[in-house]
Length: 323
Image 1 (cartoon, rainbow, N blue to C red):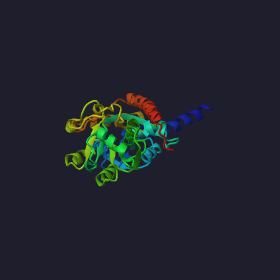
Image 2 (image 1 turned 90 degrees about the vertical axis):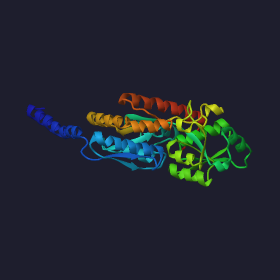
Image 3 (image 1 turned 180 degrees about the vertical axis):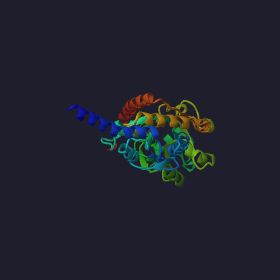
Image 4 (image 1 turned 90 degrees about the horizontal axis):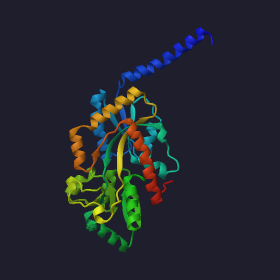
């Protein structure tokens, strides 16, 4: 190639790359979208909105939460998998999206390689809820009555393959019960199902249920974890009742499309870590038995690989496929 042609080619390439670098350095210059694959009022939705509010100041731009519910969180994840890697579209995702769904479905509309893990946000606790009118005194009483009932227990879930569903499947296997799954789109809808008596029980997180528990409209029969939850100290753990392995551990994290420029990735990571360090957020999470935890990008990426393997072993042991 003649020298003049080579210089022209280099100049052209530099001209094409320069705007990308400039845009990355200027990021963000408009609002950022946070895709939320969970329903309004749910624990992840509440946490995601707190995250968005906390990220706005360090980014200097609003972070707008957009709920895209359904398909075992796959609808929201798929939307982000096709987004431009410019930092303006992010995904708030739980363990279902990357650790469970690939083992539960033969095909998912996204691949882990299409995403850039940014940071872990929270680890949560699962409780077992029921309507007091059902008359279950505790976990063992529920099992005893279920074994003599004419019909199988009906349990609610807010997404096939998420913690609400897999914890119930765990319980079904460990207790040796017949149970019927009633699917709901959101936590609020499942709560209404419990209150109306449409379902007998549901496994779910803590936060959205605190008011219903205090009012006596719902009852919790047990909680996952080694210790009781501070604000719910009267509720025994599953381990205390003879089920130490019951209750899927779950977590939430922040992701972007693969290929984020390094300066953009660093800016997003820093803003998310700063948001999660809010003392009020930490106090609320601790009171509900949850743990706020952030990680550097490399550690969170490796955690995703380890969690994928761990959930695969559990799902394989339960023999669940959702194709």
